[in-house]
Image (cartoon, rainbow, N blue to C red):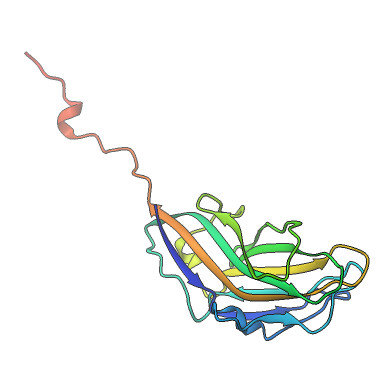
Length: 189
């Protein structure tokens, strides 16, 4: 099995509706450089962020068309700042593609003030999608995440430094071998 790892090519704030909070500087998620995308206010009272949507536009994969997509891994360097006693966690982490949204891998991991790389999916996880090289090579391929303030009170401000995606792929499974002409003939003695 082979793999290719790339940072996403672009980031954008995608409105969620309701009383969600927008991401500032969403384009900062394209490199591991300390420049972060964050929100401008503390999350409060079970509040959510909008989606931070990151796609490969500008940094697309180039997986050969004869490959099988075995799995996708998404890494996010994420942390919070602030001193409130809230509990912020990744509520949604969803693979996005031309096929629609994949499985939600959000978890209840409590974000800390220390930048931490969280890993979602893996070498044998296609996120419930029938992924093909054309799908993962598209500019629309990527991931989106939203953060939740899980306690009733003031939460911290989430920050994301980068989103990096690894696509695992392998050669197509060989089909049944064609029987040779000689193997179908009976030998007469």
